[in-house]
Image (cartoon, rainbow, N blue to C red; front, side, top):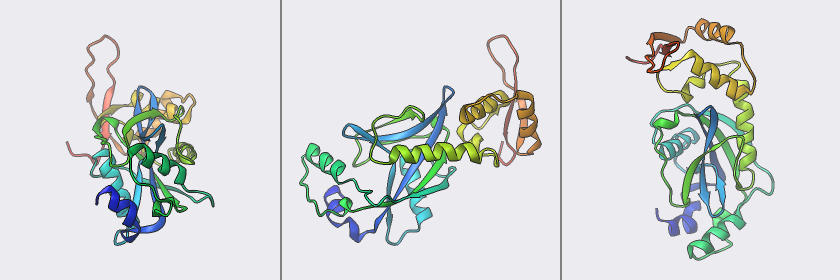
Length: 239
């Protein structure tokens, strides 16, 4: 479907007034990162719409696959955002005029949209983001230092940031942000970054190992002198 058909007839193909927004979180240089797309002078979350003959989960998987290149990855429902004034008519109008496209205030995209938001944890090094039909660029931003963004997208990211803090206290999901093989010091530092506080290293490691989720591998060989910590991986991972 080309852009013209999408603008003019999209309501025939997608569920009306409903969208999906994805908070795709990565980790690099001891910072949590968030994948954002640029339209004009503002940034926004990767997202999309739900086809009339498509389930919500299939739409989420399609959007994640299209934006990260990952076939299977972590994802979790976050929340519903549906302020009574939630529409992006001014942003779309600016995009159309800048792109030299005909603008019509009656386009379906100008309607109010309720969005289903999800968050996903990914290893940045395994992702292959691409520029889509609408956006002009993509980049990974520090989740605590975001650029100028569309309407409530910054609030959605803040919600995901807080949810992740709570979720890791009850379930082991943070390994999705690391390479397949990682050390306990790396996992420890990651948790400190997410929780924004110091954690006792010995107690943390005992807790992680007592979960029974991780398999110990040979020590990592460092070129520089110093301790060489053991590497770990999920027990379910194939060698």
